Image (cartoon, rainbow over all chains, first blue to last red; front, top):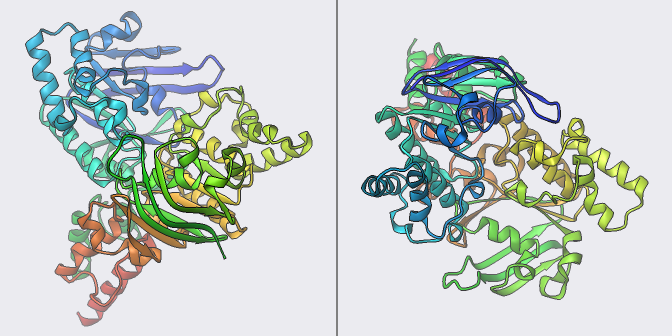
Length: 269
Length: 289
């Protein structure tokens, strides 16, 4: 399902102009990371995808639906949204109930709900915690519950707002596996992140925001090498990319493996 | 004389069998900057709550051992006295922001108002802290209209303004952009230079290596490793236990068997160390060639 954002501007009631004429197109099945400094407009942008915010000017279309003409409840069939703070979305007594709430609300038949819940539990590695109260879990696992509850809605488009915040190495790896699986299933994934290394290792396309505008948009390798533009929006290139740039490697590298291959070539030259 | 002293501290949250902290012995000198690392669930936040007096004054459960700050036992102190000595910046800024104030300026002034500081001094100190934490331009905004990273700066400012002797921070930059993170580490380092004692739970090892004096690695509620940042952060045992390690360290480890990192050279944690190491190897290779 296509996402089309045309000339989108948004002004908060307090007068802050958070988005300025943003235009973007995201094709079905794309994996997109949105990066940029705090206050750049990242969350404001993605809140337009499920109608939580409506354009002050311009238009957002999810497939053939203009978000101004569809309720948030309707848009939830097309766009799943995982909040930055899991505590804003969890409310039931057990993990399994929490995960079943979304698909039940969408009116899926019982059998399908069960399948979706099992699948979400498995993807997030929450099986052993299915009967636990979400608030008895650590923040890390609560985040996984929030993610599972959106996965179970089986929407074509998923939005993650800072999924790596406060997560440890094992949990970030788990997230990377979930995103890879969603890609395999042909889902569109849009992720806001400050973890630029996570971004470099898991996303093909990167959108850089600053001051309510899109500063850069393109393949990760192209975008993440542009240190000067990134610095304008308080972002450093990924650690490995910085290392490659400092050593003057011929290509932009994103992972340790890529770095070592390119560095070996440079040494031999 | 250490300002913070923990001796054989073991703590159970209510109704739990497994201790969240077990046999913790820790002394922190005045003006020292100690970073605490560990996987989620290792006890980082619990250690922060213990230092800040939330354990045992807010979280019940069972606390054993000695927790002493500035010569006073936590059990002998009220939380309201304790928080004037030890300031805690929460992991989640939503938990910190009072909800009682309309602007960032008022929010940051809240603690001082409560401790009866004269108005003119409040204004001076708040302005100074807003400047230092890089949020002077947000002074008139509502704390709730800010992004997660901006709220974290407000949370930090509202504690710094109280000038606690000991500053405890629980992942204070988790929602911040990368350059913002570096700035905040810089501010905290500066506080330590001025004599504030800092204990900070954090995952971002590259910055820990550059700014902290000492690293404590927690694992399942116990101190697993402790020492100079560089020694701890490049210790192989961290990888086994699922601690986050610097990508520079990982890259150099992968480079070793390929002959792309010199064996006698310590593994890098920071960009500068990695650049120096790989450059040295390249120069050596080219000389040979």
